[in-house]
Image 1 (spheres, rainbow, N blue to C red):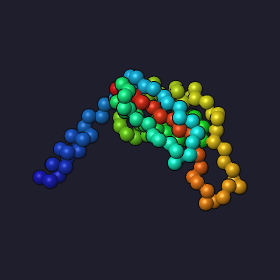
Image 2: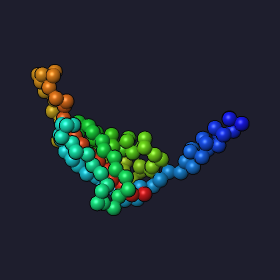
Image 3: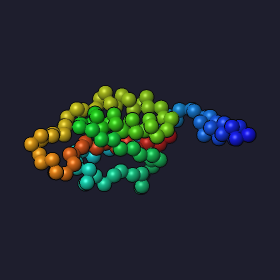
Image 4: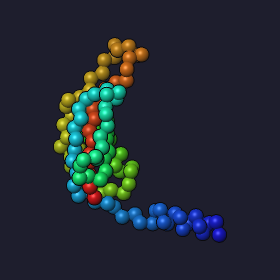
Length: 118
């Protein structure tokens, strides 16, 4: 009986594995900043339903990270967004100074967010 209930719950949660197509999206380029100063990104006062933010050393890496966040958050068809990675620039890039003090603040990152609607 317990096994039957567990299977019913599993199929209720995982049974419908259809891919959700992202029909409209907006890419927000936040640029380079320290994590302490990044205020986040939301969907308030927009027509979008979802948002994800990625970080990296340059816009291309940040966009790739953002798509990974979206892929891990649900069953989304990312085919429309994958071409954006290929076209994303690799400059400007975060510069690291190895002479910086080890106790200094965390290194800066390049931030990119994607807002989308299904």
